[in-house]
Length: 141
Figure (cartoon, helix red, strand yellow):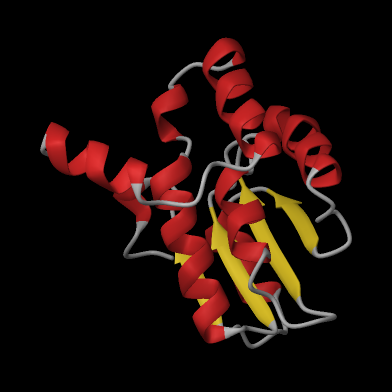
């Protein structure tokens, strides 16, 4: 993105939530490929979409460290649920710790495994789906 445009967007956006800021930082310190984390601007965009739709149920394919799940969960209707699927089981505890810190642990259900195997077993209709898993498998999702 154009550097001036990026600066403008940053200056005119709501500041990053401190929990998300720490999640972003810890992701970059602890994990390989930290560029997979959504980050502030993409997170705000996802939050806005969720707030506009006010979904009862969200499906997210690809949790990574949980940044986008937290952002999406902010738009859920009261009592709503976000189901997030992540292949890498080593990320679950880290993401869950930030779901708790963000106060979203009651709204977010984490599932671990291949999305292609988990999705057929879900008996839920989703109002919003965010696909952010392995790009080579998008058609299969």
